[in-house]
Length: 269
Image (cartoon, rainbow, N blue to C red):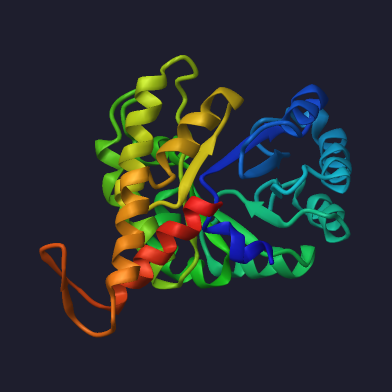
């Protein structure tokens, strides 16, 4: 089932649905999920063609990768045509931008017959994230729009976003759904991307939203457990006998065994 694989995704790559060359290239990329974008990445004049191209692209498939289509915002000019087109598509998920209440998500999921992911891109979305999360398959932090809505300096650090990012993770975890960090805009700054991936993982995000194929390797590597984590997880599972007990100088219990199994599941992915 696609939803059971979602929390194993380390990299979710946004591609303009209006760019056939990018779509063809994506069939050979190592991103865990391919997202065909019909919203911000597409000019108004190209919306109809992008919608058709997105549906055709997911019908052809991307190998074993999960697929999603980001539609236009609820209540907007293109929303109705988008949800009708997705209803019979092969996409695994629909992504709703600028989600601010659970009814938007439920309506979108019902109209498209697809599990929905909500992009949290406004202050209102952050404040309502806990109500939105149970209606979704996961939450995606839309950090560019959120920064603008919060009035943060352009190109500044993410310090002003920290509280919002943690609220998104808290909402997702409270309702046992996936959570993905926002995009990194620097296309030629591998060090900056790596720092942001490490920060996002430390916040508890499952993976990273990406806007360019060059970012995939870094996200996959840094949202994957390293060899030391994998070996530590194996040792813990082998040593655990049930209940609270001492292991390698610390106390462990069943919760730690579950965490170790999650590490190995992500490593296998």
